[in-house]
Image (cartoon, rainbow, N blue to C red; front, top):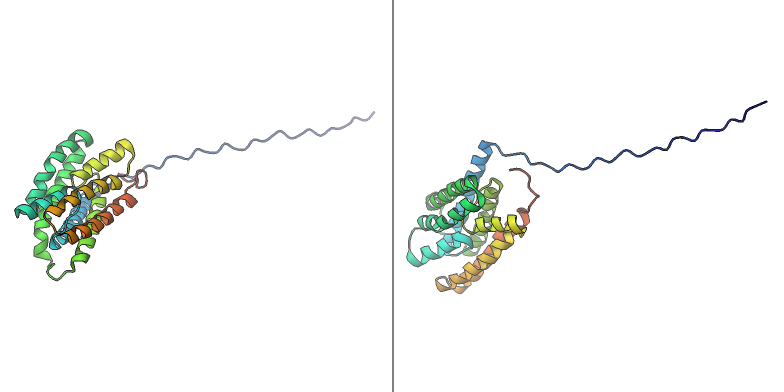
Length: 222
């Protein structure tokens, strides 16, 4: 008697479970990187503001408010800029915390001082006013972006824009642009209309720098 051999069906195989992608974690900046980054940002912002002043132009934010007041009162821009930012520093303390406020205070003080010193380092007497306004706003936007990367800002409406972005998900650049346009329109009281129109174009450039490059989740270092 011969037995019938039957093939044993292979055991079903299961595909290995796919590993869930891990959320990327940003690498914190070192203390040196923060100091160097904030210094760089303050220098770039102050250079941009120096160019704007050379063209008797305006921009948005507290820098724009300070420029308008300095044109109307002939007071030094640096001191006006620092004073205008004080109420917003109080807001930053309660909404963003002690560390952010301290860094922003340092940045505001540095920009105030450096803006006064820039004319001693560079001459803007032969600078094309259109180029000065457009480049000035681009530099100011780049400097602000650097400061944002190091948990700081140039105070004022930048702080408000960051708070709105964190609370409501609206990009800081768009918040800043809306407020900036309102401030620039006020410049019609002290600045010629063609300079105001040029300032609007410059403010759009500044805020495009922020809107394109400062998005939640895009930059992970802290």
